[in-house]
Length: 80
Image 1 (cartoon, one colour):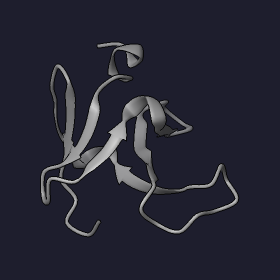
Image 2 (tube, rainbow, N blue to C red):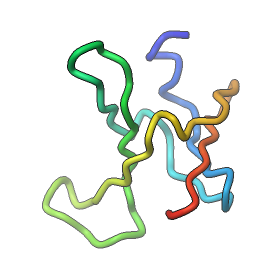
Image 3 (spheres, rainbow, N blue to C red):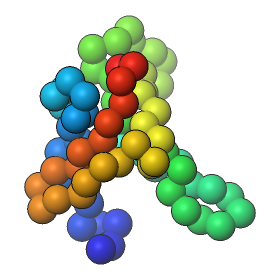
Image 4 (cartoon, rainbow, N blue to C red):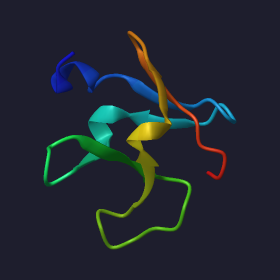
């Protein structure tokens, strides 16, 4: 699967069913030494506003991803 194929997928937390937008609106953090994805930064529209484009980000570790389906990316994090 190519990175461009992930853009339209909705990001959902398995723990509580919360939706965090589409991957196209998120940022990816990469490991500098090997280029692997380290985490996804998803906009936190429900949190306080910041000077960075008017939104804060929630960092989702790549290890929290449980399933990448046709239309959805499911992750599991308890503390969001």
